[in-house]
Image (cartoon, rainbow, N blue to C red; front, side, top):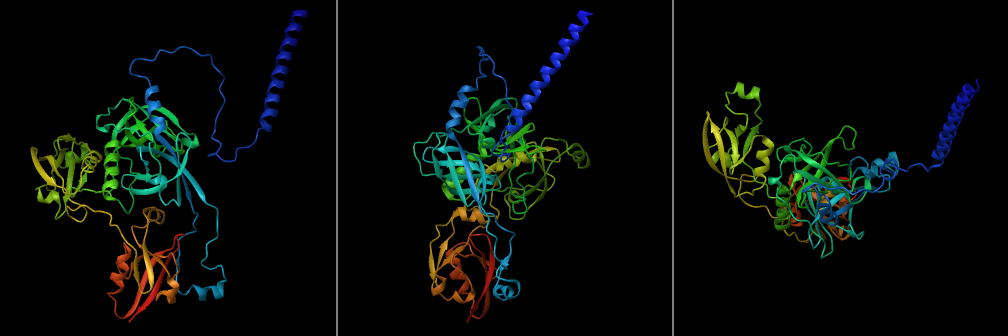
Length: 497
C-alpha cells in the first residue's frame, strides 16, 4: 500500500512540475514584443546549442571557398517608390469640374513612400552592378549597400524586361567583382550556391544542385513583350526567398553562372525550386547596355512550336528533339535562308536545341547582322542553312541610344528624360518641358516638368522630336500627350496657325 501511494505521489509531482514549466513558458511568451511586420521580423525558431565536432568534408564538396569569394561581391539593393493612385488623365476641363466637385478633384492623396529590396552582383570593380529588372522597375530611388556596410545611391544604366536583367552604377572604385562562369558547362546534378539578401537577412548563402536547364515558366511574358521574352532558366533546389532576386548563383569555384530571379511557390516563400537567368545571357545583356545603351535583340523571324508525341504523330515528324517552324515571316532572315513551315530545327551553331526555350536562348546570344548555322529536318532529311539574323524591323542595323540634347522651341526648353525616370514611369522616351511661363505653351495649362510622349499621332522619343513634329502643323489644334513625374497622365491642346 505504501508503495502504491509512493508511485501515485510521484506521478502527481511530475504532472504538477510540468504544469508549472508550461505556465512559466506561457508567461514569458506573452511578455515578448509583437513583430511589426513579416518582412522586418522573419518567422524564426530557436534551436539548442550543439557541441562542436570535427567534420570531414568530401573532396570537391567544400562550399567555404565559393562562399568566401562570392559574398563580398553581392550587394543589397534597396528601392523607394511613390505610392500612386490609379492613373487618370488631366485635361483643360479640370478647373470647371472642380467648380462642381470641389478642390480635391483630380488631385492625388499624398502617401508615404513604399520600400522594396533585393540583391545585386558587382560585375566590374568601378561600380557596375547587375540585378533583376523587377527589383528596380519604376523605382524613384535606388540605393546599394555593400557587404562592408557602405551605402551608395545608384543610377540605372539600362534594363531589359525581356530577360529581367538591369545594370546599375554606383560612384565607387576598387570594388570586389565577381568572375563570370560558363553556364553552358553547368550540368544537371552539379552543386551550386545562391547568395543574396532574403527577407533582409544580408549575405545569406544557401546550397543546392542544378535540377534542370532551359526551363520556361512564363514569368516574363507580358502583352508588351509577348514575342520577345527569353526564358531559359537554370532550375535549382537551393533555397531562395523574396529578397534573393538579383543575387548570385555560383558554382563551387565561386564563378557566376546565373542571376537568381524567381521561385516556384504557392505560398510566396521557398517551396523546393528556384530559377536563375544563365550567365551566358547575363553577360551579353550587360555588354550590350555598356556598349550601345540598348539590348541588341536578334530574331530568327519564324514562329516556333514545341513538339510532343501527339503533335509529332499528327504531323508525321520523326523526332521529338527539335523545334517545329509553324510559320516564317516575310523579309526575315529565316525566309531568306530558305526555311519554311514544317521544318524542324535541331541545332544552332552545332548546339542541340530540343525545345523552344533552348532555341530562343541560343539566338538571344547574337546581335542583328550576325550569321548562325541552323541544322534542321525537312521530310525526315537533315539539312543546313545559314541565317542572317535581323532586328524586329527586319534590319541588320544595331540600335544605339542617341545622346539626346536639350532644345529650345517657342520659348520653352525641352530636356531629355533619364533612363531611371523612363523605368519609373514605364515610358520609352520623351521630352521634359521647363520654362512654360515665358513660352507659347503657357496658355495650355501645362506645368514645368511635364514629359511629352506623343504629339498627335507621332511618338516623341527625344527633345528634337517636339520641334520636328510641331513644325509640321500649320493650322488647327494639336493634342500633346504625356505624363508628370508623379505618374499623372495628361493631354493638352495647342492651337497652331
